[in-house]
Image 1 (tube, helix red, strand yellow):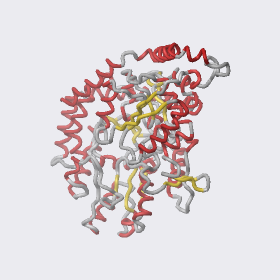
Image 2 (image 1 turned 45 degrees about the vertical axis):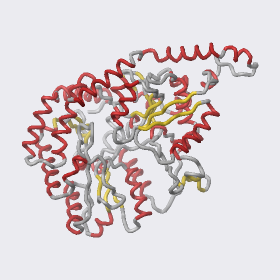
Image 3 (image 1 turned 135 degrees about the horizontal axis):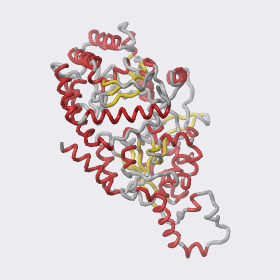
Image 4 (image 1 turned 180 degrees about the horizontal axis):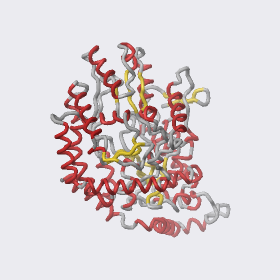
Length: 542
């Protein structure tokens, strides 16, 4: 209950702190006017060659940059160990260009959610911030936590405005207003199973591309190498579908368009929403997870784990949750270097269930929190970080010659053990496809082949590569308290069911549903379903 009260208080603080939501442009104008008055004497003494602030299209000319500024940029996760060296070099460059420096702060992965909301509610300086659909972007936007950018973005970040297609920006709007700047690089949201292909071949086991084959694969390794670690699934906080990562395995079985709060709809029939938690399928699926847990596929201590054992060190033979193609290729390349006798295979859920589609633009984005006292300067800086190649190279790759080299004038090559690798500051939200540096082609085309297969598969889906969830922004303001209550119920009752660590699956499901209903599940489901069906109607998904 304390957790529920804390969540409610956080959002109440955000509401009270950001009550001036509608005055974004006015606030910026006031700052510019004040800056202009303070520097009027300087302007009178300048010669006639100065660009005209009224007619210039360059925001650096229109906006007074004579006073230095230090901005705060919050990112999620943990940075690479040599990130401060990169930041120092970046700030030298930004100081010369826009008289601005940036202090980067990180939430860390262990407590990012609490830290993230605390920053927004406390009034702590924060001028730029990572945001995504999974960081409650839409709900926070509705509370006034972020500046509206419809007028500010073209005014102070014209290069970003030219770079990103207006239709992509439209997908990031909440109640018709733009609050975020998405990354400029197409990615796929597909996840899958990373596994030891060499062990599969060694013991003549099936590729784990069905539930039956997955069981046979894990069981086969267990029988042949009883001392080998198998799986190390973890609990997932604030998740209303996969509270325990092993539940992700059912993406081999279902082609989910949505899966939240116990509601599910298949990709080819998105308006046929069912209550999965009350279905025979759910009971059957949970019994399978109990069977695997009883077989010893994972430890009984997994409920307390928040970090998976290392696949790259050989402690486990497969990962099933949150494993996208980029994480897979990281293990694939690491194995080639550190374990030449290994092979790392990958089964894409999207290829199995025919749901490959590009990720939502809200997968990685940047917002200007209302904690910022200078949103104009924040956007000018963001414009540089995203659209100036020198600045973008620093923030994404590090320092050339120290952390990376350009081979043959065009190919990216990481300098090993330099302390900073590509996107080591978790700046996925600052991607710009124009500056993306490819690695020198080799005979190994595994990753390229994977992306090619995604491109081809996406074009052949019913929706021809469209992600049905793009543009769908859940509004849970009317059931915020019920949602917080349900989160506690899921942690206590659903997580052990999905971990297979209950004695009686059917009795445990019955108790879980009883508690979920008491928490307000029906109200949540009714509102969520109504929003989803309205989204499908708007975009013609039937």
